[in-house]
Length: 583
Image 1 (cartoon, helix red, strand yellow):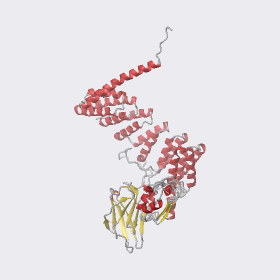
Image 2 (cartoon, rainbow, N blue to C red; image 1 turned 90 degrees about the horizontal axis):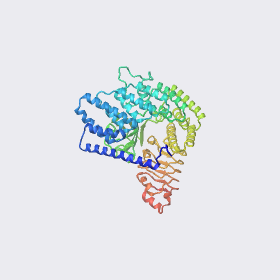
Image 3 (cartoon, rainbow, N blue to C red; image 1 turned 90 degrees about the vertical axis):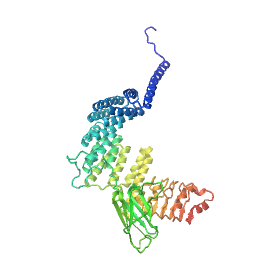
Image 4 (tube, rainbow, N blue to C red; image 1 turned 60 degrees about the horizontal axis):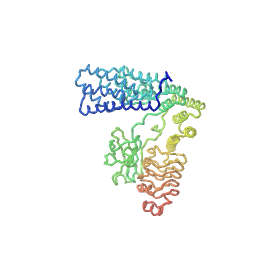
């Protein structure tokens, strides 16, 4: 046995480790308590700075210590000369580098570094950019470093084209880089903005003007550059079809600019003496400066959203004083002013008319797709062809399938409707964990298509029966609809947004799984509701129907609520205006 090293047992090793941890913990706790005591006493000296440095060197995620450290540094700023302050903060930056080596994704370290850099009398931004380059070369998805880099770029005025070249370099070395693709999406609109001026497809900023900051509000990218980006991203997803990052960027390229903020529709009812206004986005009318002018005279009216749940809503309504427009023999002219956005919309209520409206259709607004130039149409067709070729090689690739759907939506949503439905069915099979998402997205596209068809036919009847709908959307576009059929779908509820259908007279929603009627709130023209074979189980679920003053016909056959004892008399008492009740 001589000459052999005596090995410690596992139990002995664990015991020694435990004792070592306890020893370190006692030292750590003692230092922490000493720091807290100094802070309580208001001590702001070099010794406190040294104590915090000792603890943060081993645990850089102690936010309280960073806060105390900043208090000390701010105090020392006031008692030192500028050159000494410069040296103090440079030493702080060196200390922070050591903290980042302990944890490269430390929230506290990166936040503190940003604070120090902003207070440096003579910051060295080139050095900070170099630090970011080194950190991102080790981990190109370190979002803390990306955030810090954007701050450095903003503070130092790095040209946008230089930053774009930086993303080129990172993407070239690794296609699977979400952060680089995202950063690129913020830079391109600044360097190649979509110009409203027809002669120049790409507007280059003049040399005399300062370079735009990557942090300013983004706009759309000009078509010339957009076509180049399609080629770049296609190389990425053909290289690795299963990598998500390039596909996400491609979806951004296929996206559209935000809709112009405007009044999209004004509806006026002579009988109800009510005005409804639809906007291109949800607004708070009480704080947005909405003013109604009738026959040249400003009116004092109270605007309210269509449902109590909404402080911001795309549709707002108001009641006019009794007798204001009820006279059928007179013509009235209304103007709704949106003073916040310096825009307005006129609407004329002609003699003999019971109602009138003025609106832009979904096609006029390019709500669901943009008008494409010949060149862009040709490129997107080529992209669609390429994706179809990739799908032949990768028939189970969900990203390819979804991108094909989006390309079809951009090119011709109605013409490709059948293929779109087929691809959604395949998506649900190959990516069953997200089948609910695909169901909702397919529902959204089917509703958009039906809106387009309705507008082309210029009717106010909206049929979405037997479409496998799982949700409802774009309901602000249905303000003028009088008859809607939602039967034979997979709907679980009529959401509060359903109250935007202010002209609705007939609702058919048979054979769904509806158990919530939140959206049937104060629909002033609603007369008939058919809810056969749904999941309405409680009398209280029907309470909101009491707010619909003209409701006379209600069909509840096949709902659990009909099994409640004395349901006939209960419903008669709850809804006395309903004369045709089927249970």
